[in-house]
Length: 321
Ligand SMILES: NC(=O)c1ccc[n+]([C@@H]2O[C@H](COP(=O)([O-])OP(=O)(O)OC[C@H]3O[C@@H](n4cnc5c(N)ncnc54)[C@H](OP(=O)(O)O)[C@@H]3O)[C@@H](O)[C@H]2O)c1
Ligand SMILES: *[C@@H]1O[C@H](CO)[C@@H](O)[C@H](O)[C@H]1NC(C)=O
Image 1 (cartoon, protein in one colour):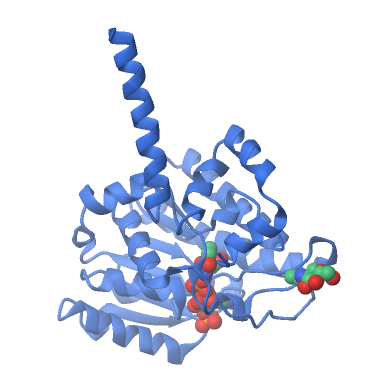
Image 2 (cartoon, helix red, strand yellow):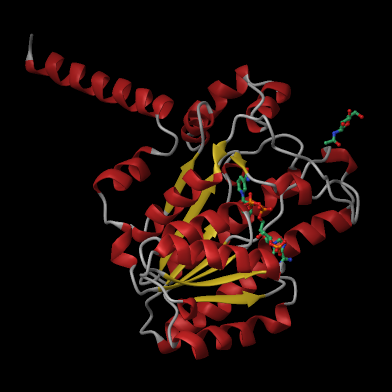
């Protein structure tokens, strides 16, 4: 065997190994690597992390994962009763690392932009610092492309994009003006934010826009950490509240009995991504994880596109396998 042949075999083995990992893992390879060999969550102990959409699903699971390691939290959403339950769950998970005062409940409607600044003051008055903002609040959508009313496009962008960017700007200004330019902005995007899926046109566009806004922030403010966390299908209640194509109508759907990654696992992976200050990461069960890799490569996207009818793609995203 010549040296060149040897190199070629190594290269083939490398790619085959990589593809096997795409199939076996429930997140991208570098996130999995960090979850094993990266910085531990306990390095975030004492930091203050503000999570929007903390009353359920992914935000709730992320809060509990961080609390377990003594990370101080601001929990925001509209449903106060649910936030109180999450606070109790966080304190229990922290097993003495956190006191009641370390987990602040901050009720807020993301759509009331005029209150964002005073919410930040509340956080700073309470903790005297803020290290990470996690923009997680958001709503999905199920609708036929042709039937979406323009008001739905506007409302969905208002919540999933503009409210997020408005709050982030306020927090970034604080990072720049009062925190020496250091700070961490994160958002729950979606794999639909890299690669379109059927029957969610506005949602796909909104998550693409969110990714673009945050990537643009990162190229402008190099000292800031920016994390785009993109889940595939996760078992949460988010289909209840999902937008449809009709103004004011909610889907009222359920994810029961669908093949989806648990919110608990998703929240923990998100926490790993934050501790390791990762830039773009994702998670999802097979074949979502493998497809996310393909979606990020134009050639693979084209090849896969030939095999993917809209029905098949929809079944994958709805966990009907
Ligand atoms: N589940 C999935 O398959 C999946 C996949 C990819 C991405 N995501 C993203 O993950 C994020 C969290 O969703 P989830 O799956 O965990 O669903 P979820 O359980 O429905 O959580 C949504 C959260 O957003 C909050 N929220 C909604 N509207 C709000 C508003 N106007 N003001 C303040 N908070 C608001 C809700 O709290 P209140 O109702 O109490 O205000 C709730 O805490 C979303 O951005 C979603 O797009 C989910
Ligand atoms: C899209 O339209 C088809 C045909 O009218 C209908 O069966 C389907 O339920 C619609 N899907 C959504 C998400 O509204």
